[in-house]
Length: 151
Length: 93
Image (cartoon, rainbow over all chains, first blue to last red):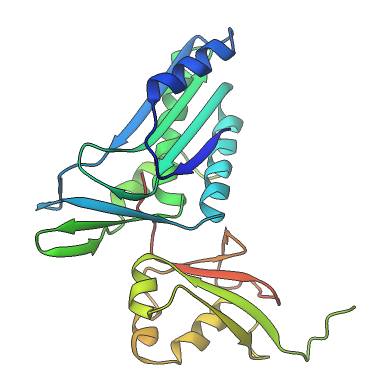
């Protein structure tokens, strides 16, 4: 399966091993793991809750993966995004991309994260000493997604 | 059976994240008035509820709208049975 939205944790090493063993053409695997930090916008974060739009989130992620596959020659792609309550040091998101060479693997991995951050319906709510607050979207994320050009 | 345009069209409207909280509901079934045929017209119709609706859905607010789980534009047409979702800009990853 290419896209998973789940409450449970994931094992990046196991996912990469499975990918590598499944296809001897693979010469490069790029992997990105997003992690919950204990600080955001100057406030300490005790935990965060990730909300999503069941159905649309999976569909949006599939679309982003298809877009990456149309831009680069990739042998395998996996996106795992967690939902529910997470604490600092917890893993949030995993992107694994396999190709023949590192160039397309690195680029596609970064592209997937940039698009995921601006197009996949997930929302973070943080608990801080001042109370809980919804995280606001960042202009820098739009700029990062924009540099890949129009789709 | 051929759908009759003069009949009441029902749509499902979903709200997520901060909008779900400020508007006080996560979903509702709405019988579309005949004059509401697009996303922009639905938003205007919801805004007329006043209070938080007027405030949160005001022009210029960062609200995203999806129809049947695809991102929509103000001009996107609405039909009976559609699933429309209102939510703030996404913050995953």
